[in-house]
Length: 116
Image 1 (cartoon, rainbow, N blue to C red):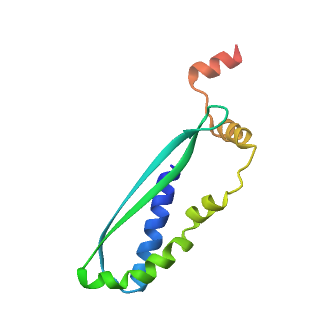
Image 2 (cartoon, rainbow, N blue to C red; image 1 turned 60 degrees about the vertical axis):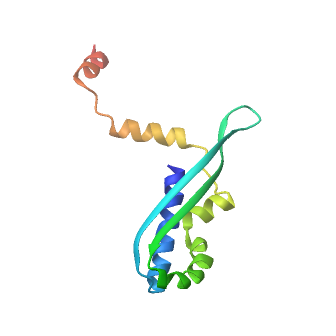
């Protein structure tokens, strides 16, 4: 999900910038590949992600890509947040159970088990 979010955000930022530069983009293909590594405790972590953007533009528009290539990455909220090391909450598990409790509707057999 993280790879998809980064790839989508970079694609959207690039398309927005290219649109502002009046570059006609006929299509965009984005691929994201990642590397899993193990930390000191042997647990899997994301070691790195590589994003490849493949905009389909006319040959006469290619020389106008330069400015967008220099700018678009800075406007990708997801990429820049991950790069800077975003803060994460410590109480995700508790939040999850509050959501489950508030959205859980017991099935008939669960209701019977609770009342007998």
